[in-house]
Image (cartoon, rainbow, N blue to C red; front, side):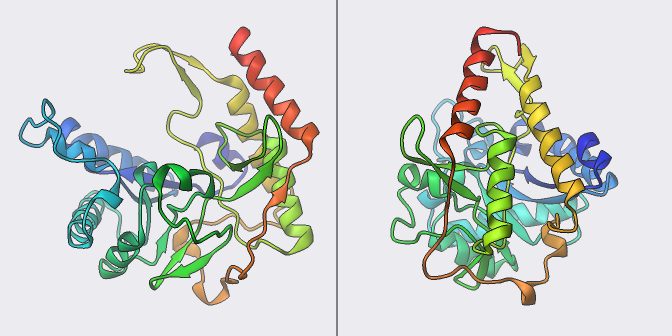
Length: 283
């Protein structure tokens, strides 16, 4: 938030709320209040496996983590519970959702609609194989599905180390790759809505599974700073906004043929070299 504020950019935090069954409610309430007081945006995120801590069921897990494992009625109840918790923590009207592990399906979108959500941002083309959902639907821009505006995580196509789709995740791609994708979208007018992601742990390299010991990933912080600086310097070309600020009447729908930027090999090689160096040198 300090970095984003320095460049006058708003961030959206998809906050997980079912963790109350492990941490209690105060932890998440304080986080939501802190984000809102900093004038950033809070939306809903769910990891249903936290329900295993309800009634001490963690020794024999009953609840799976991906929403697509649940019926539409079950998803409707889970999303309704999540929405009520966010409202309890000070979020006036949650409008957007992102599924844990991107593990959603068509029923999720219907359940979101029933709970009054306008937006979903769970579609990630690079993860379709692992989720086994939407295999026949390929999108890379805003798309209306089951009455909900889907804002997919923006992907580009890389050829190094092999041909693959890469999401604009600050953890996994360089600022140069993100900026090139943004510039291509602007110049070609082929993609109108870009979604970039990062996580609460993006700037940390864990040395154990509990994150009790970590290193600071300075090169990832630098990526984020470079991206924020670029967006600030080119604010006449790119509008950075949260879901609360989206005017749905101005959303340009995704074309029937989706478009992906083909990343130049040199950019990907530079990123691979950076990642290799981070493994053998202090980060």
